[in-house]
Length: 314
Image (cartoon, rainbow, N blue to C red; front, side, top):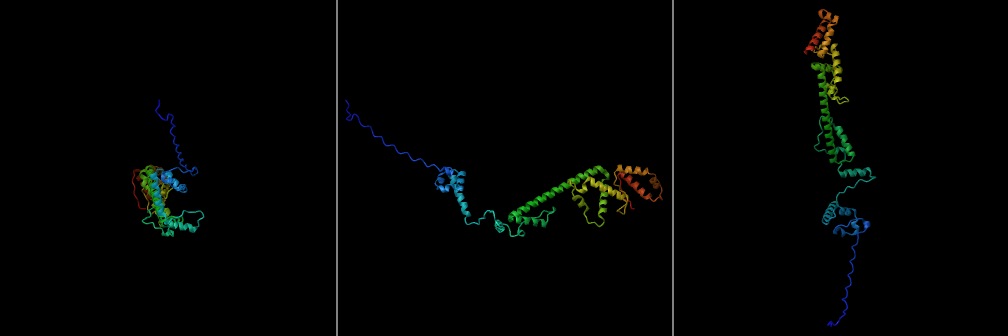
């Protein structure tokens, strides 16, 4: 027998279910801006869509990083407020607009007022004051500031100096190669051959010429870069001309008995002389008008064969 006074009690009432929390509002997909740190989400929607802020969020999605860089950008912007801001060039600017723009960038009023500081023009490479003035004029037309013009001039001077040194090295190398080739070809007659070439040039220029023959011959480059005075073919032509002039005793008051012939050439010339009956007769006849000249020529040929040389007064 049950002692429960209420054998069929009503079940305990079930509490009403709590209402579901409203879902967090989703960002407007039309804004195409990622959800970021709390400091970004706290911004009004119109600020969140500013490109600079959206880019800041993209680069710095972390809360602390985003906040730090936002402060830095704000500080940087504050420095510009009230500063002398230079506008970017615009289409349709007049010459006056450009001149004002260049002036604010640091261009002096005229090209003559560029201050090049401690710049020194390179020496020995053809640098001229007129050329430098022309370069500065171009710099001024282009709107270059004083610092830009100084950098341009210094850089160009370095390039010119380097080109000059390279050209000098090229000349030295070509001189050496040309000299070596002719020394091998002429052997012991090389000095005399060079003398003959020099005499030919000297005669061609005339006794009153002020031309620096050595500078002309070594500084004038042919198409292949060889100095004219070191080109084997050119020197051989000059040497041949000098020998021809010496044979006819033209252009000098002395007969140069230091022949410019190689031993082989001298031997051939001596054999030819000894085979000529008229010259043999003159050599043995002291009263013959050609006797002295032929004796001198024979002596020179013998000297060339054995490598000797001397100068005989006419």
